[in-house]
Length: 97
Image (cartoon, rainbow, N blue to C red; front, side, top):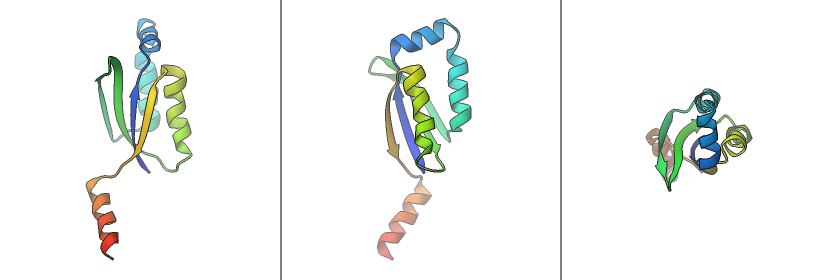
């Protein structure tokens, strides 16, 4: 299931991880585990934020994907199912079949 994960990080927690030199390790581990097909990092609402597009093999994988964001980064997380253009075309084709 292709999913867009949007996360806004808690400033206090992320400041602490940066000051302790742990942010690269935490972000690297998260990216290695999720293997996003797209990853974008930016400021949002005065916070550090990012958007990842990941392909999860099953719905229960959401737990492992999101818990570290809440526990380690104090993130506000939004999950949205999404699809690429090919998948959209396939879905539209099913409407007319």
